[in-house]
Length: 166
Image (cartoon, rainbow, N blue to C red; front, side, top):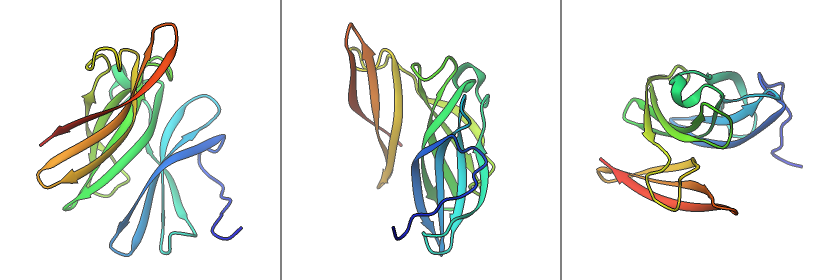
């Protein structure tokens, strides 16, 4: 199959949920990786978008221990000017209490300025259990986000929720 590559990854029990940007002439990808127990966010880059290298861990656990002590996954990344902006799902108790966390980087590999972006329980009836899988775009002066909200009221339900900020 053309375009498929098998790689030795830092964390390789499970991988997925990536976001790719073309930054100048370099493709950069951030994606979820699991070591069999915990998810983390990994990074790689490529000159052609097909052959990837420079594999590393981008975001580890415990950046905001009350929110991401056990899980970090589902990254979405934008580069605005010279700053990379990431939103990801984090959980302190496992995969059923995700919140959306924001952080920044000047190189796309070392992240700082972590803070809670969207907690669960904001949209009554749609996200009282968890928020995850953010997708963010910048439209003019607004950042627009779509994410999954999860509820459990006898039946597990998933909703797509929209929000925006400047």
